[in-house]
Image (tube, rainbow, N blue to C red; front, side):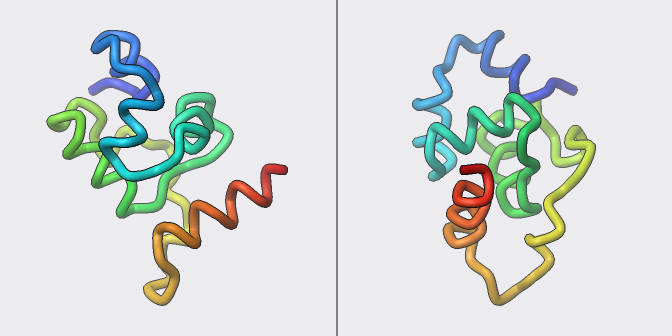
Length: 86
């Protein structure tokens, strides 16, 4: 089981290209790689699918608890994290 950082290094895929594939900003992928933020459950599942299971949901130490709010979309979740980090 690989981390996202190791997967990107091994595959040679850029953060920007991977971000496009999972429908987030490059900055979000950068934060995930650096451990500055954790993915929501939905995002962790998208990462797992995009990496063909190499970066499993279970590989994350923490899943963002905000993702437990069913009324909050992934996009608003990501935007609030980006503004929190500023």
